[in-house]
Amino acid sequence: MADHSHAPDHAEHVDSPAELLVTFVAVAALTVLNLVISSAVENPLRLGLQLAVGTVQAVIIARTFMHMRRSDTMTYLTVGSALFFMSIMFILILSDMLTRHNGSY
Image (cartoon, rainbow, N blue to C red; front, side):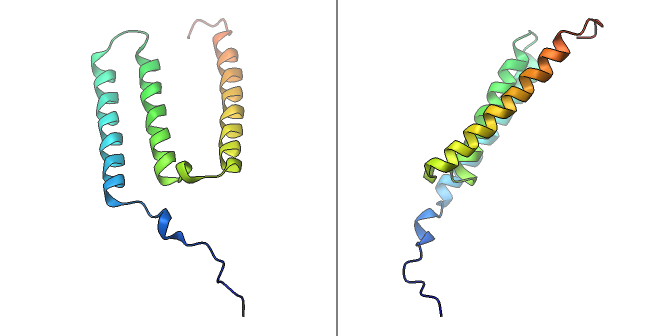
């Protein structure tokens, strides 16, 4: 049989209910803030504010449920490269959309 005496103990990676409750309250509060921004603010910065709030929500979720705060360097490298290539995709798509001269944007 296989010797599992050197298997890592995963008990230290269990999140406490208090951490999960704080995460839930933070994401819920940011969702309410996003709703307030969408209904109250009527200026061109509204989209940027909503994207910033959504980014903060995504970071909170990734750090809690993807266990990014306890990850090794390879995981950070993988996430960083994915975000880098996704930003290239968004930049290319937006540059194409914003340079069209059909007057709809």
